[in-house]
Length: 154
Image (cartoon, one colour):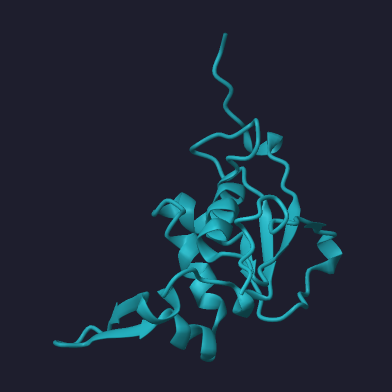
């Protein structure tokens, strides 16, 4: 028995659309990270980008459990002494770029390095219900109905 290793010609990429309205952020991020990496396929090869393309719509309506809206903090540094900054998840979701909460959650579940950056290029996160990728004929992936815990009832 030989170990299967996918070649670039063997890789077939599909497109998926996921509606994030009311879906728990962490559960969504795990599922999308696995699709981007290709771990949901039989032909998964760790050193190849064999994952699919994912479009997430309604990113601003994602749900966070517990007090994460107020307590979860995102840090960055300006590069100057004493230049550490922070924002809560609630501030980012109410701000100008609410899709960044979803992007960061998924980005932190994908490996760091050239392969992870390539896989993150297959992700599109959109604010609102409309996206401009109808030409790719994406499949609708109903993530909220896979498990009752995936959708947050508030």
